[in-house]
Image: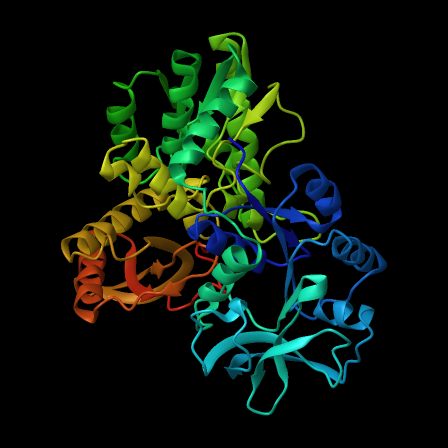
Length: 509
């Protein structure tokens, strides 16, 4: 089944992924395409509309300008969010007074009853990062939203199907932002809203069958939400031709290896558990750089799977639970790498498999959970705490040793246990502990100590692209701190991370 599509053109930055998530929440299928591939993609896929977005205020190269000009020639409805507005105005004979970085909320009011603004209240406050003041937008434009000072915020040229918005409707801080995106999809592009997780499931099962045929697939199963849902989906398509390999790296949370095995060994698939703790810790000995840790773990994962693949025999495909945020943060096209994920940027250049099977690579975390529910997976597995591919390696600051891992495992278990006892486990998107490489003076049993500082992290997010720190009640934090410092050896201080994403990432490494 081919869905109606809206194509989001990525000119750099990460806001395009938030736009994509809003579109999918409105039951419209979309793809985010790098600007270099945009024209070929549009010609092949024939979308109903285009959204241009990128890093606001970014200098336009000749290549950018050429792509924008060719996109205009398609006659498809184009919604330009911040980025490329300046170029569109200039190409239409308009004049720009000035441009400025703003990064602030701006109060705006509607000046039109156009259907792009249907059900949008006025006045409203919106978030903008880049603002153009213009005395002349060029012929054919109607200003439909403006500031109290009369500066244009949103404008349109219906003859040329151009819609310009000088704020970020995809951000929750912009009032009525979702309504504007919905109006563009349904009122302007005439989308039908035919994309659902159920449809995605059926399409992916068929896609996996077409890709794999009767060949064998090896899945890197971590036991986390992503790889578990991936296993359930692929098994629906190819059954016993799927072999799930759980590599116990020694970087798992307390009791996690046994929990993973307990669930999957009785499922209708081939399950293998490998004890590779000594192997991984040996490779990581003395390594402190976060990117090197991830690269080493990614390399070693692949080598382990290659060895298992040769033992299983005739394995052509490697499957992974890669999801959209993994790809985004590992960098693509002109973007900067934020951090390499072991199942994306951490892959070695040469792998001993015919191809990769990554059926979840277009989904955000909440969509993966909904897919798990659609696949009738148990609730405790679908809503398991997110866990990074490299495991606790990215939660141990500095050198990784078994001793430090064991300290972290005990402290993290206490934190998660108390959060659940407080009834906060389903309200917080992700929560975990980090053992820092900072040691401080303390007192225990009337004796001076010089032990580790432990950090606690808890965030609330819908898409894991942006996240807010959670205001856990002080009495809960107090109980967690007291238990950890009294029950776990070599920790004498507990701190709480109150940083949002951005500027911080969710993980510390």
